[in-house]
Length: 101
Image (cartoon, rainbow, N blue to C red; front, side):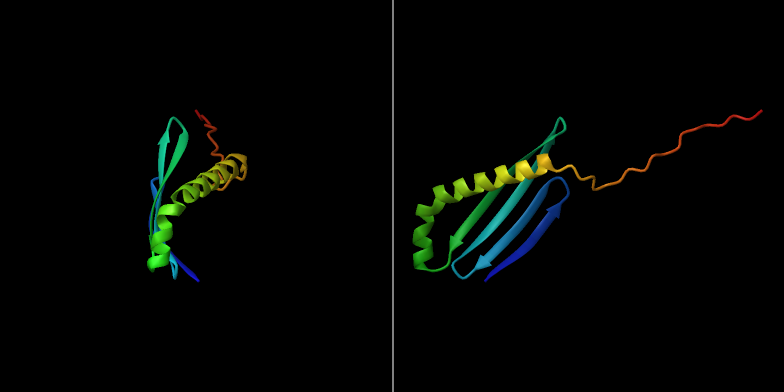
């Protein structure tokens, strides 16, 4: 069983989460930076093993966890770029001006 908690949300800036399980705990931050109409997403995570066995595996798992994170971010990028749904409807405003004398 894993307990997932959203710790902080700042629109267009940050999504901070924590994951707690018997085997290990993780703090995970997703940071958003917008420039020239494009958004860069960076992630930062801290993982701590619970117990001597989990702690000893940490040093061996760093590379595989980075590979998995890169694959997850690439999938997220593809999902975002292929998404065409309009989530925020923008109403057309009538700008017709009628002049009377």
